[in-house]
Image (tube, rainbow, N blue to C red):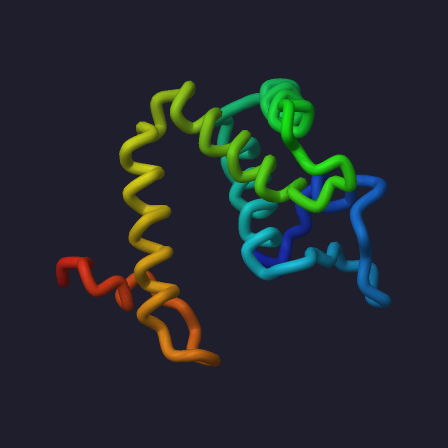
Length: 126
């Protein structure tokens, strides 16, 4: 079994929606990626699970959040971004810059094609 096939104990958390095969399911691909990044960063020791839970809870309970939980993964990304800034992994300007770059890439991508950061018309080739 490769490292990619090893299931994290966190992926076995009770309450996660599951497919017929028992795998976690998410409403959009990006939400699965946000979950996977969070689990990976936790497992690498960037933050403790209690730090993560506190950050996510703070986001979910901010005034103006959707009462039906429909913005849950938006809260998730905000919490993860905040922790990465607090832990000194990155800064808010870098996160905002990437957000804008992904938005430009999405707007420049033909309908039905995969969105790639390279599609950002302002990106510089490496």
